[in-house]
Length: 228
Figure 1 (tube, rainbow, N blue to C red):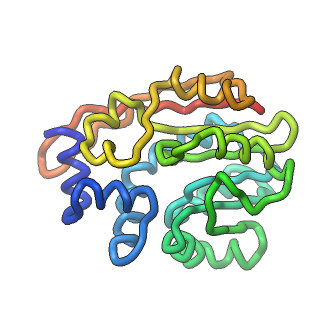
Figure 2 (tube, rainbow, N blue to C red):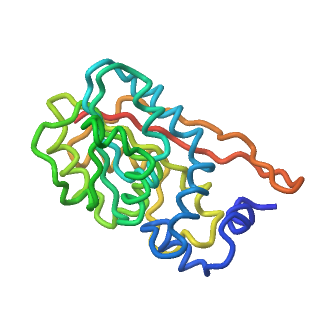
């Protein structure tokens, strides 16, 4: 069975176009289910991305596209006195994330905002590190987002992009609706054209997924670490 069949079994019901729209911006009755399913699919990518980020005490970190925010508690456990912000395009996901992280939000350790990363509600030079996981596909004009990311990064701040490769993504028919896909060298060139230097590229094979006794070939993903 193909990767597409796996995802279709997880997200039953919507057409390919509707599924693509929900993955871009979860909303309505499907939002909760989308957030939960993406947690399972993306969990391994979070751990690997954080390891590459080399998180240290006192850093100020921003996640773009945090979904339902289930992993913020795990992120906070990587170091002491972290200050973490999150920006997500989906109002429904921001609401879910605030409910999952009530204590962190109340304490001021976690700041969650609704908005788009091409116009971020953050001041210049605010963050030591910024990361996004399976988000860059949805940037119609990646330069606009990268300029904003560069603006809110501190001098020599680092940006980490985690994406599945174009070859892997093209197996999924819904990606023809609004997905901008990249191979590692393509994304590195996009970064370079917008003032970043990609200084570490880690390619990985995600674990083989199994559903109902059917095995699925590994999905190739890449973490691209860059400096502004």
